[in-house]
Image (cartoon, rainbow, N blue to C red; front, side):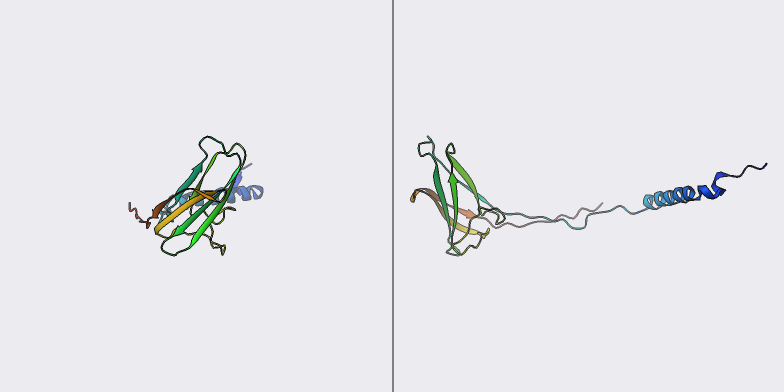
Length: 149
């Protein structure tokens, strides 16, 4: 009797093929060039936080209507917030992302955008101006750094 190597037995061929394929894959991956990032995706958005607070909680539930006026475009953008019992204040971001159900919008429904420039704002409670102010949205830009090894 002559012993026959196991890789020559027909039932073992699928296993031998799998092992050979795995070995080839290891060899190919070992010599593959290293992947490098060519381009970065980046975004920068300027936002301003506006807020109102009933310092002593005397009003109870109230509606806060934020109005932001763009001096550049002449447009007014509104955001209405309902404050429930126990809530004394609220902070909002301008401009608000339009995917948010409550966002700053013009009377036409147009969402506010971060256009650089000067703005004035006020918050009305029960139809009366409670607070207000002004701010400037800056120009923003993105710088990309390419890293070479």
